[in-house]
Image (cartoon, rainbow, N blue to C red; front, side, top):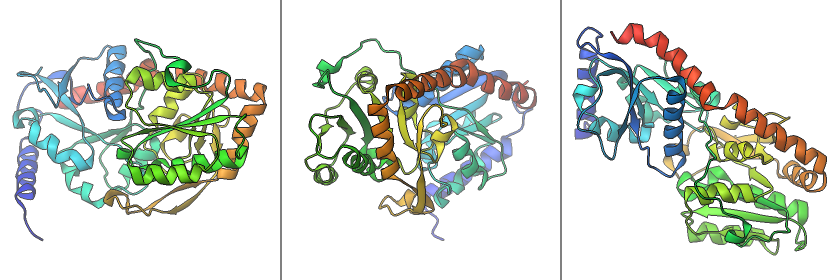
Length: 381
């Protein structure tokens, strides 16, 4: 095996961390140093912000450590929580000063969308003492590759906005029933699978221009995939929104829709469907992977699926299986939500209630606090 400078650096760093990872090397206080990207307008950033708000709700001591602007000094807290998946672990390793690794209990916040974690991630396992992840699906994937503790700390959807936008702001007709799906090409359109949503919509409503409307919100769209999606839509009433949007605009767009649809092939958690449910929107979603932690048949329209081999050009997604949703069943859910107001209200109300109770900052904070109580006596003084 060829030893590259990065591999040598990682190995030496791992050896040093292991050599000095003793609770009596330095006297540290109970508390968390939380490393991540708190300003990112993405799911990763929202996940980080949700964890910090949950710590606030539980009254736990912490300090935010922004990777883009690391503070000149850090509180002497004994537990690090580091948001860095396997593909960006080297970046975290290089940015965090060695003195802030040593003598601390290091928690890696990882999330993965498939049953099989990429082999290239395994080399980073020794850098951490424990892992946090937002879903039981992702936790099971991690437990297959490590015997270290893996704790489920759910993402908490935040739907408060400073500015609220309406249908007129997005050019959406006020009198139409609207289905919405959205994806970011940087998160792989093959995984998010808007193709299945368009197929289901066409199956349900054909080319009826007086019936419901499907909006496909695309971020970082690439022309070849957009052309493919437009061809797939044909003459059906499908509209594409391609302009960049602020966080408030994205949440408002979800709120303007009647139903959110996610026929994903795999999700580590699925923050956008969770946000839609918290906004009181019925969600039609593939009944597989991370979203099943917060979805059940009373609170969402779960679609059957077939597990198929992953076939994707992105090298992290070349191992394992993912789900192909039943578009005929999804189309039936679309029709029922459109035509049956009693069923619509039942799903919408159950969705909102379940997210507000089981997936709140208080409930997540309680999970973190329980783990904190068990760790502070062992790894801090």
